[in-house]
Image (cartoon, rainbow, N blue to C red; front, side, top):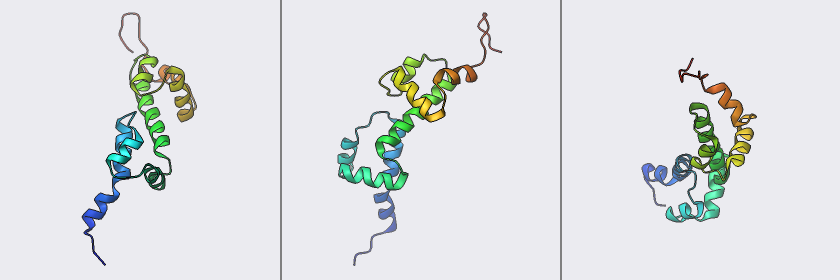
Length: 125
């Protein structure tokens, strides 16, 4: 029996966290390419990621994308179509469906409740 230092075991098993971090940062990492670059079979990647996070990598990516968009919707007045593109959605209706699925309300609802009222002079109250 060969003993392996704990530090090597931990590093070898951190790939689900590495993938989650990449999915949180980037709307479009290719899972097959990511698996190949990290020495994993795509099927193993999906199966083991799901064991670690309870979601497939694709579902995790979709949820992360919706969370990024939700934060932008609430914190800025960037046009929704631009938020959709910036966060990796196909179009604004795709963004809207994801936000409704995440929060129960469309982006316009969150815009109205998150952005301070603007007066005609451009000052906020």
